[in-house]
Length: 155
Ligand SMILES: [Zn+2]
Ligand SMILES: [Zn+2]
Image (cartoon, rainbow, N blue to C red; front, top):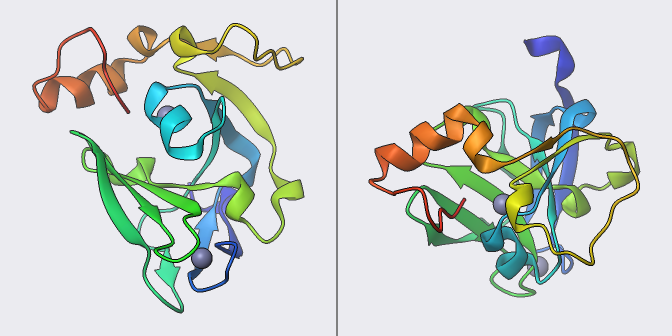
């Protein structure tokens, strides 16, 4: 498990929040869920998984907001950059936003998730796997643990 994680640094636009972490740059994913759309203001978010226990904020901490019953997202309280997703169900789902990395060009996207809410005009010209939420048993389980039913499940 450990060899796919590499040390990286990143942070927000205004540099008040800076982080170090070990992340998996080779399995980034587009998340098309509606919560990612709202919290980024973009059609999708690209998440980079963090090795549990390795994320460290080296200046200010981000401000966390409870964005759904199963997760919090962290933002810079000064410039508003979205930086991090913290799952309350699975420690290994914690991820940082691709754009927050100091070297986002190293990221290799490998799949699309929550494609049932992908915007019809947002087409990404790749042949990567496209996964609907209902075909992702771990996610179903996380939602169930929060008492959520099939419709309108937010990430
Ligand atoms: Zn900032
Ligand atoms: Zn999402």
